[in-house]
Length: 528
Ligand code: GDP
Image 1 (cartoon, rainbow, N blue to C red):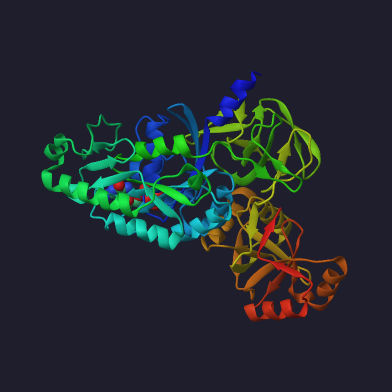
Image 2: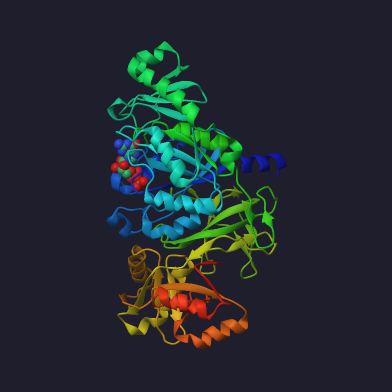
């Protein structure tokens, strides 16, 4: 392998995810981004509900019924001199756990905001997660073809509510019916908008220079004058883009446009490919692993079953952290200390699968999982380490699960443990009885579990109320753990990966337990 080719392959990659509140336009922007990447001939096939066609990311009936996207799919496409990996995050609130973990597998995020609404709840939550790793953020103010809020006010809201400085790269000219386009502050040019061409890559008209009289002719002298006035104010009042601050997660470049009208998406992609970081290293317990190391390493951040009903299998999504995957290579599965030869890893082109010859740091590959892989598992080329920072979250909702046919208890238990390894749900088995308690972060997970138990394990299960309010993973030295096991036996359970947990009927009970056992750590997240 030629070294400069290896370095070039890695450095041209950009791996990002979109964070937004439902309905802000994530799906639409994904379609347009793919259109630019020419991964799709006609934008509009990502989500079935719009095109009427079978959406490529559909994998369960339930998803179609509810019209939401439950999956996290991965899309790879070329853009200019770069290769972009876009990780789709499920939009529904109920799948936040998966979303959080997906954010550990990207190097930057695109934040999409509905400019008529401003900063919304879920964006706020997701931004908190990106702040944990100071992930660089690019911002797209969407729906400029509607009446939006005052752009300066929007920037101000982002700055105060999300605690990140804004550097506008483009500035809108009008909005709604009067939306005329944007002025690009770095290129000193106005790019004119035409409505009704959202399905294609448009030939746009560009006017050089802010004082160019052509601008007055094109947008009318009122709007041109307003633009010039506003820009004076904006340039005085807002921050200038600074690459270092951006890479540090302290400043976000802001673009304006309309995803539906496919306007402004390319400006954002230009910025993303130019400024967003190439694949970044990741910490392990032992040391930090850098992308340009010649040896392969990666971690599993998501496991998904039934991606394609024709295949009926489980795929582990692995983010390559360093080196290169080559078909047929041997990988070390560090948790179980075994070498495995992998010759059938998958890549994901706009939701289609293709067998993969090679892949580089920054890419996501799909590994066939025959039951030995869990979220958080690390694969290397020999060295024994485990990547850190891929959490499980303590569930907030609990139900006891029971079989309609009691003879299938083994099947039920197997199904639940496999589903918990995928991160679809968590399962707890109390020490004192044979209950199976299902814990979820969102209510929809309960339905998914019952549907999948039936489809994949052929067991019919129903839920019952259980008196559990919260769960915590417990850690401490052996003597102390023994003590809490004895004294609070009714509250101790084993989770799907055999970890001890404290399940509390009320929050007050949890506080009391914490007071009584000060040497025990009660953790709300668990790393693998
Ligand atoms: P998601 O829930 O974030 O994936 O949002 P979608 O992409 O599904 O968009 C939600 C709704 O907003 C859909 O009806 C879209 O057609 C619409 N939408 C998305 N972008 C725009 C836009 O730029 N302008 C207008 N007017 N509507 C948009």
